[in-house]
Image (tube, helix red, strand yellow):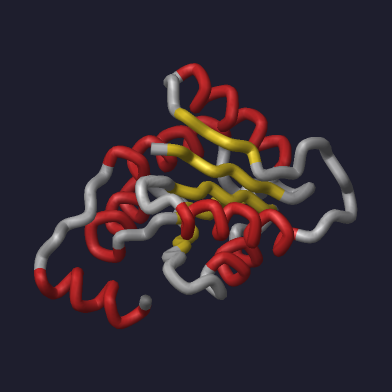
Amino acid sequence: MTIYLGADHGGFELKEKLKAYLAQAKYSMEDCGAQSLVPDDDFPVYANAVSEKVKSDAMSFGILICRSGGGMTIAANRHTGIRAVECMSVEQAEHARTNNNANVLTLAAQWTSEGDAQHIVDAFLRTEFHHEERFVRRVGMVG
C-alpha cells in the first residue's frame, strides 16, 4: 500500500508532520506537494495530483490537507473513482472506510491537532471496507 500526500499552504505544516509520522511507522508514501511552503499556491493542484495517483493504484490511499479540508474534498471528488471524505474524528474515519470505502482522507489543518491527525490517519489506514451487499451497492452508485 502506498500513501499519496498533498497539501497547500494551509496544510503544509501538518503534512510535513504526518509525513515524518508515517515514515517512522514504515509506510510507503509519496509526497505530491507542495514541496515547500508557497503562501499563494492553489489546493486543486495537489488534490488533482493525489487523486490521479490513487486512481492509478488501487491498493493506495490519499491524504490531502488544507486549512478547512473542504476545498481538497471538493477537488478530489471531481475525479471518477475517488471517494474523498473529510474526517475530524477517529469514528468518522472508521465509518468512511467501513461504509463508503473512502480512498482519500482530507484533513482540516486549522482545526486538527497533530495528535488528532495521527489518530485519524491510523484509523483510516487500518480500517477495512465492509463488503456487505448494501455498502458495495451504494459505493457502486457513486462510482
